[in-house]
Image 1 (tube, helix red, strand yellow):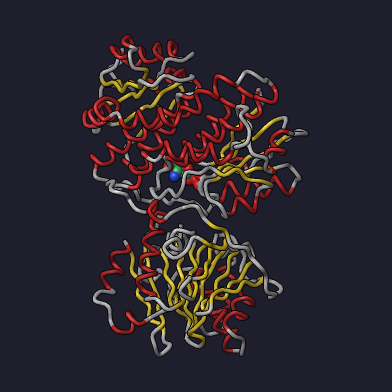
Image 2: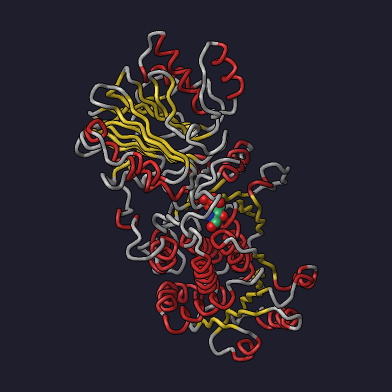
Amino acid sequence: MCGIVGYIGTRPAVSILLQGLKRLEYRGYDSSGVAFVTEGGKVEICKSEGKLENIQKLLNPPGQAQLKATCGIGHTRWATHGKPTTQNAHPHRAGHVVLIHNGIIENYQELKKEIIERGHKPLSETDSELFGFLVLDEMESGLGLADSVRKTFTRLQGGNSVVVMSEKESGVVVGVRNGSPLVVANDPEGGAILASDAQPILEFTRKVIFLEHGDLVVATKDGIEVFDLVSGKKVDRKSTELDWSVDKLDKGGYPHYMLKEIYEQPTALVDTMNGILDKMSTVPFTLAQQPGIQILEQASEIHLVACGTSYYGAMEGKYWLETWARMPVHVELASEFRYRKPVFRPGSVVIGISQSGETADTLAVLREVRSHKIPTLGITNVRGSSIVREADAVFFTSAGPEIGVAATKSFTTQLMMFLMLSGHLAKKRNPGMVDELFSDLVHLPHLVALLLEDESGFRKAISSAAKALANSTGFFFIGRGYSFPIALEGALKLKEIAYVHAEGYAAGELKHGPIAMIDPSITVVVLAPKDQWRDKTVSNLEEVKARGAKILGIGTAGDHLLERLCDYWIPISQSTHESLMPFFLTPAVQLLSYDIAVLHGTDVDKPRNLAKSVTVE
Ligand code: M6R
């Protein structure tokens, strides 16, 4: 959702802001803008609806004031209050105060009334602009910028982050994190940079500070100072050295980030495994000691709570936790769970799964559950994200930055995390049972790499099927057992990036209603590797074939019977433990959706209407 960048230092601010906003584009936005301080201390604003290119064009050719500016703020807006127009785009000006904002000011109606009564005339429909007038009035009454922001911010209800400048204090940028994340760093060449996540900062340094809820940062040419929002006292925030490298932020020769990220999955799987295993132990599934392990070991039942792709990751996790660890598991959509009255038993543990660590519904569940003293855990890919604050302990996947809005490697690394946790619990309860699984697991990333490199078999089969089926009026993805969550994920991928109607179903469910939809214009993608469910799935396949659907099969190479039933066939020649088949099926459905999206000419990395992290309910 909204992206924030701020810079003050010695370098050209506008190009830093534009480059930073480019890095944040993946979050999803519908308008953008920058504001920079001229040599005379005045602030110039340039903003536009639509893509970032629109303001890049407006700023080209750059004038002297722009070229010389070394301080400014920039924003990409994902509309909540007010349409995605230029007027509603950030930065907003209130007199000499200029600001950008991420979040929702829940009491904005009451604030708007008050501001209008005081004689101000807000120009936009946004809640954000109102904050500027509150700061302006405090500054007019004699307070400095930082104190005005501090005093005013406490009046806002809801989760909000802001970055503010004033023409009266042109050498200062003030930021507050109170909900949506804000990351800051000292520029090694002097000055500071602020952003919604670490990606715009990595160009300058890997040493970042993830501000905490209720932190106010004052950035000047001398660097940053952090204060407590309520007391105003200086606080010491440790910096974190990120292991993400800046080259991970480029497409690396691929036409889209999504494709690059699909191909990064083998490395991401190795990194995630290495990130959690105890490197000193040779015993399978021995995990490095960390606070989350103890909570997990004491659980007698687990609630997995998530949204979207992470929810499907949790569904897969349930199969493994039940099968391997014999752990009772409930999988819940965060947006439903938060408004239910769930029953917890002694030993219940709630795990929130969120690749971004910022999904509002998932965070709200953890917050609520934790307030009832139920132990909570998080699984996320983003260090310093809000889930770290909301859960008692967090397990980190190591997918690296994922820029495509469609989750790919963040999903498979969640699967890896669930396998590691399941194996760990299973080892404790059933020593010996998991050795076979572990020995296949260590070879898994290599096998996934071989599958992805199989250009003439696997990859060619997918692109031929995509070409032949791209114009189907609808798709059903079906599977049983371990393949069922991947069928759901396949349907979601196709919907979100190709805008094609698709549904995921448990293969056994088709005849309970959806089979009425089946005709020759429909494609059924059947996920049926050779496992304990394969024969049952094949029977379900016969039922749809008899009704004229086109069939695309994804199964084990050499399964000639199944292949003959299918109009199109994607073979998986890697053989492994049946629990691990989802790691091969997933790239197949990802690439199928990708190829169909490319054929349809959609914006694969930034699909319409979507945001990478959904920070509103
Ligand atoms: O960051 P999260 O994992 O909490 O995000 C949840 C969903 O919004 C997300 O998984 C979404 O469904 C994917 N981007 C789809 O590819």
